[in-house]
Amino acid sequence: MTSTNKQNLMLGIAAIAILAAIAWISLRGTNEPGDDCAAAVRSADVLSPTLFSDEKTRAAYQVAKDIPEVLEQLPCFCGCMTSFGHKNNLFCFKDQHGSGCNICQDIALDARKMHDQGVSIAQIQDNIKAKYAHYQP
Image 1 (cartoon, rainbow, N blue to C red):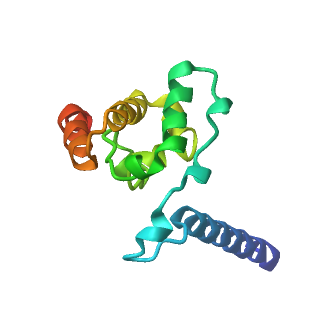
Image 2: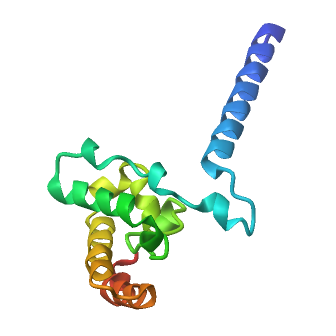
């Protein structure tokens, strides 16, 4: 192997390492251990319901916009909390994940119905866990 080939190989490896580091940092986000505020998704972070043509999908994203404080207290049982690092059901609606997942949508829509009926957060949590926990992979 010539010195030019070795140099090109080393530059390629360095470029891959730099790209991997950038990807890791961007996927990791700004969360510090114990910093729950940094992990929070806010209503403004949720995708607009108008981006979706499906009525159920739009409704679920609207729930995330309207009552983020409820969804952030609910687990999701589709596997996204382990597979994608979601912290709660609200995280499902910050990107298009929630648009393709009936479990995410159903949790949000059930939460809205209970919230509108005046059910406490603790009872909503219990009801969601009882109804959806068996879906967890």
